[in-house]
View (cartoon, one colour):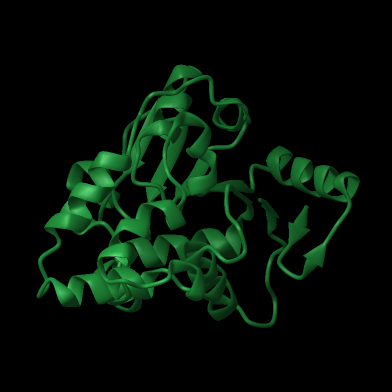
Length: 228
């Protein structure tokens, strides 16, 4: 168990995060690790065929988005293979995913995810919640009445695979290309306590998100937690 600055005890986490849930100030950030039990791939396995095509040793790279960018450049900007790779590797078969089931049953209404699949929203709906899914900039302006949970898919959705965030340029230009999603994320970082689930600390998605947290408020940050 860890927070932004270091390891903490299980008891400290439970006490602090339970208080945030009670105050309705809790949010959950869901990463690729939560989808693996349902048969989906880790970032490393998702990107490996691209690295193999480029004859790159994937283990020599700390930031895998460099590989996706190199591959896109090698393909003269044609995302076809990358898009096919995303679609072929994504499954919405739930397969008794205990982590997502537990997440969906918490009294939390705000969820963010970098996952392209539909597993999180499917589990939330299965738990009896009315879910408002924010897949892109346009969806942020339309709200479902009586919603119990909102899922912000900040890196896109497999149903709109050509606009998923996966290359270095996508990450670097995120704020410019997704201004409203960026604003919503900054607001939640200020107002809510996040629990990150399914991320490793070498995950490019997590590194990007933590960087945004630090830039949001460098001197007076909320305490956020991470379970790998």
